[in-house]
Length: 422
Ligand code: C5P
Image 1 (cartoon, rainbow, N blue to C red):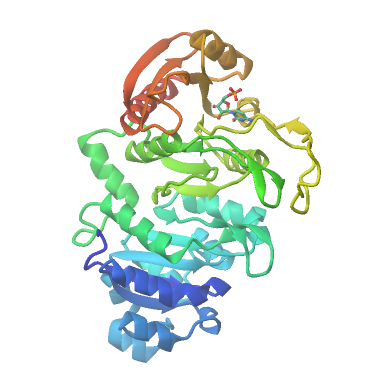
Image 2 (cartoon, helix red, strand yellow):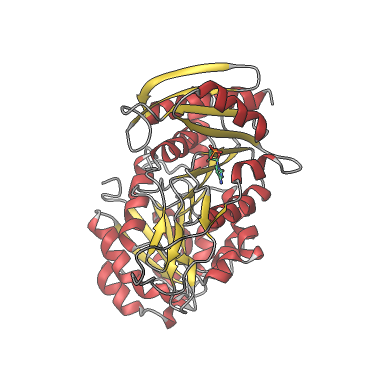
């Protein structure tokens, strides 16, 4: 438990998910953290200071210009007290203020005044999350030492369905805990993520420093009706391994993931999607905001159901037919952008691996393709190990069977070399 005995400052802003704040305090204290809560002015409409004081065992902080509070623990002392600053829920308004460095209340002032790593767990209506202004603010934040946790997709308090739900409190607490475990000496010598990378850089130069990498991972789910879907066996392990290694190698990573049974690496921005069409728009929105390297590791469904039934289909007939239509090719669309990033695709083949991989490289106009032989039953889908042959128009390199994490590092090292000469 990396959070054991660490001081976590929990900022709560004014969305409906603020009612989960007492539960989040419990999850954090359950991991051994000392928690103090800062409420934004509007959050007190959703959760009472008294209940947060009771669960945290500490007074709740609310006002910047309160002489009494400043005489106790002033905002600079509070900023220094924190080993970790977590904002959950983070509203669209809070994200906008962070993006522009505003400091008009206690919480936003603390974000500027602290050297502790900052995590935010957004929560808002799906349309507000998708709004161009919110996405532009997130793109600014992605350049900073602020780690985004979620949001998740699902049914929202307002009845809408989509992205913007705050992650479950246990996932937030565990993701912060995992991320802190990768940041040595957070308690005694607080380093921001970039300082942390800079230290690494000093001893061991980071080949992907300063690069924004967008990675797709996992399967997609193509709905048949509200309860059924078409999908595949992709576990997401290769894409998630690439995301983790890319961060280790200094990159800023956006992981765009279909439904998988894996913990999202907390140090990445993670966008959870369901269908190929969702993944297509999430990728193009993200890549259009600035991307150096795009890695298409997802097993995207080639087809989707033409007419998704609005209600559960009844088994009234002995036979039924589904009409399928082709999904857009996300990787080819990114490679066809006017100024595309460096593109790496994957090719899962059962035979003539080189022939089909090279054909894909040319047809989709890629910089690189990593091919694996899915006819082997010891590697690939749902295994921890994999082996790859990496093709560029001019080169071919074989990476032998190994753990996907080790393989990801070798593959990214090859990518980094090509990008530096790209
Ligand atoms: O054409 P094929 O599906 O074999 O190509 C595989 C590569 O293309 C993978 O990198 C996969 O992530 C990507 N792909 C995609 N969008 C699709 C289909 C495949 O990005 N609709």
